[in-house]
Amino acid sequence: MRKIVAIPFAVAGVFVLASSSALAGAQQRHTANSQLWKPHGEVSGAEYKFQLDGKYCADPAQDFKKVWAVIRGEAEKAGFPAGDVKKLKLRQGTKDYLDTPADALKHAGFIIRVNTRYEDGIAENPLRVSVKTSGKDAAFVLGTSLFTLGTKGKISAEDNPSLGQDGVMVSNVEKGVDLKLAPSQFEGMTLGEFARYVPDLKKSGLPGNTKLEATRAYYRSATVGKITLGMGEAEAKLEAWSRTADGAPMLCEFSYGYEDVDYFKTPELVEAGDAFYRKVVLSPVVREMQLPGFEKFGGSKTRLLRSQPL
Image (cartoon, rainbow, N blue to C red; front, side, top):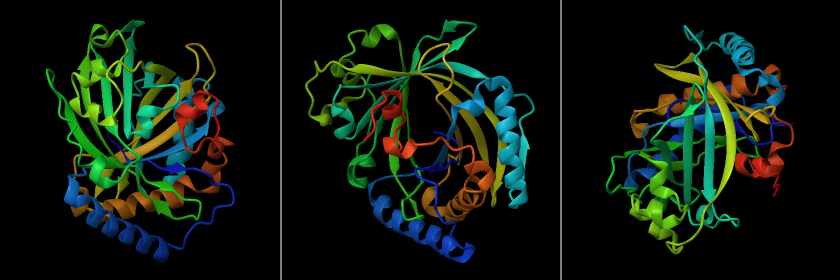
């Protein structure tokens, strides 16, 4: 969790709201979110995402710079100062999303992701593991503690705004704990092995011996720049996903966002983040790069990986 991001599901034919009504919408959404979420826990950031056609990131080392140059140009035209990083550092690895074949864990409101980074072809050890609550009401998502046993974990919650089918921004709050585990600590790939370190996973109602299968994405990612959003600054990132180690990217995700703030006290960040999405992400130049047909997968990258439309 880090940055500000935008996530459109079906941008074709979407209308861009007038500035005054869009601003009012952001304010109303922040007020409603605060009333709904605050009784259940803290929220410390937001992340917006937008899926681009993978062909625009076929060579991430070079194409990330080209894609960012387009987005940065649109940002500056829209009045959002943006800059490049001094040196683009490319990261690569795999992301494994663990669940049953029927997505029983996701339906219970949990996500387990294992991020393996590679440096000079060697996998890091221990691995980066994230356990999230998502897709349920705020009482469950924010009220579930996600405390860890036997290892340290960093807990945070963020909004994941996206564009609804009616052209209005909608929120989806997620909470997660990030920890590090050696592969030997979950070599059996059972839910119980992860619940040993994040006991709240038992609330899924699934037995501890439930076998988990991995949906794997091979990724390359980089922080490409920074965007000024009102009084704050957001990191801009690009990440290309492939189904195989040497395969062509199936999608390229642009994301931006902020973290380590008190969401409930910073309505101006919500307004600025939404405005960037509306004026820059939904600009004709950027929309032209959008991944076609992504709405058929309900905005789910794992469904896309599995070629499993709704």
